[in-house]
Length: 555
Image (cartoon, rainbow, N blue to C red; front, side, top):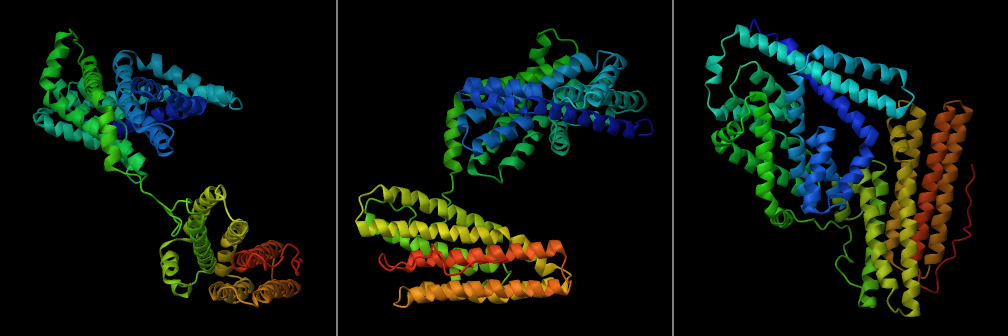
């Protein structure tokens, strides 16, 4: 290893990967949206999907990027699974273009006549035309291409020195399976089958390894490149899992068959008259990927159906009472929606208590203790938003039915209650971060203000919960009015505390502004909760008119 400049090799690999990254970034910036629109437009049939996947990958020089774009499209339902699979298969063929570029140019042309002009011109364009977006990124692409070839030269030089000064015979006598594993591991680590191909071409060019061993490494790198898609797809939605598994199956089957038939493939390439081992290697790479396309093409629909049955979409829902219930019987549907509003109210109250970092045991019911214990504040808010969407969709269907006047009025009350509850949740969500800043502040006055807010907020929420489950009573209008007045008192008391701290010069202007905002938003949240309860609990005839509430906000 004395004759192998390992740092020159690592520098070359780093420069090569940096060059590829610059090219990819520049091209995506210049025409990234165009590529996405191109894939969307030309991927709705299997043939177009294969061709568009190959074309875009050939330009972007990254099958991983194309694969991740396709994962996003499938997850959003933009393109069907069978088309996505076709694009992925085409991307595998498109990624072989890098090998052709390197084999036909990188090892044939003097580096000074290629890399240096590209780096020089590209760098000058980037700096001198920085304000012009298109030219700046065009320069970045040229710079990246130059670095790609410069990195290749460093790797080629260091590997050539190793071949000339070190006997590598004992290391190349291993079975081809060892080289296959090397290709898998190498590509999984550096996350670039193109870089693996360049390293293999460098070793082949320097006569360090024979063509058979180089071919085994390339076959292994084809499997190793699926790790990016697996990492990006498996943790996601079932649709993304299907695409990731399809990519893995294609590369696995194609790789196994290519490895088994390696001697035959090399013989066929030899019969074409190709004498250059570099060209023979990239031809083999393209050939077995093309063979995989021909092999899998008739089974794309079958594979898509299998994966759709294997990874079914999870029917995620937050509703408990209207879930899978139709509106064909309006009376039953209205009753279920009524229960769902109670469910939503409980979720909102639990989220608001979580706003004050309370123990789950301090929440209201067992179901909601579990909700508070297993979900973050943000997750609880998203859950509430989803439940609102499910309820509104159900409400829309119910509204289209023929309803009795009283049922129609009740339906309007329920949807009004839902809107108020979402307003309450939104107001509390907007000050969630501010509340925790007050709680964790090193400023004692801010800590005390947080405690004042919590000591008044939580009993108010508990009183609302109690009133919710007492049901409609004869004194309900008076009790709701008292809750609104209590809300005003809480607001005024905190405002008084703020003014006291202000007079003592304990708070900065920014802190004062933050606390005033928290006070206003929590006032608005509590008021909306009372209004929601008014809509939900009041009978059609006895609903309290809170459009002109007896309280106002000052400060």
